[in-house]
Length: 202
Length: 161
Image (tube, rainbow over all chains, first blue to last red):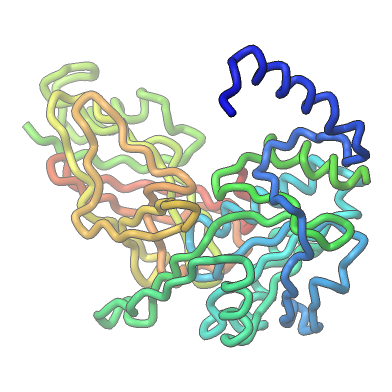
């Protein structure tokens, strides 16, 4: 059936009014990419920088902002953590309802001890997780991450150094443990905070 | 004529053309300030973020001259090595790329080293993590020669996006 333009517009308008009436959650406008359908977030099991075990599902009831990186990353990762610090500042008391979870994708170099000298220097409330290599593999699949380990550089000065190319997406998990939003790596604090506030208000 | 400019400045005085003029005048590298014959490069806001294993230096190079220049390499006593690198994003994936040939400073333009882009990577910074102050760097340019700067340390996590 071919619809005329006027008919299509009428139908679209009708649908627009019907949607909220059907008992769906009122349409909320988010700056981030909305994950649809919102489904249970993949589990994350690791050790926090303070040596305590961490399971993402234990933090249900809070909004969680999960992202990936490594402590040998000189530029983007510190910048990202500094951004998270600012998110916390902007949220004020709302920060109590939100977990910031930095997950290392470099278990070979990022020991818990190294994470303990890195993550809390930004904010002691941040989690900084070390996952076992096989766990990272599983998490990469579940979150659809790209993680690529570069070749160690040659030469006596930098032989121990290699890059880890990694997905820089921020994953936002709501209080019910559902993956709800994704932000691109270059998302600003101003874009993220209003979305987080909406999820915190639930 | 390529002028060898040596200036030691902190971010506080960065951006003041006076210091560069004074430096040039003292060295006799220029006949006077504002002369287009020997325009120097200006280094603005050199700053360093030092993490336990890594660090990054950011700054802006202003090239008022009619010829492009190139930041070839960086030396510092404050780290095991300093290299010219760039962070890139491709389809949400963060990548790091080394620039062994350095960065161009376009004629009449600027080279911007900023978080999330081009930067000077410091491998294993030697300075203690929480000390304030500055770290010395020598920037080697193809035409302008060596320029010494003091990058202002921002404490870990003190960096603002």
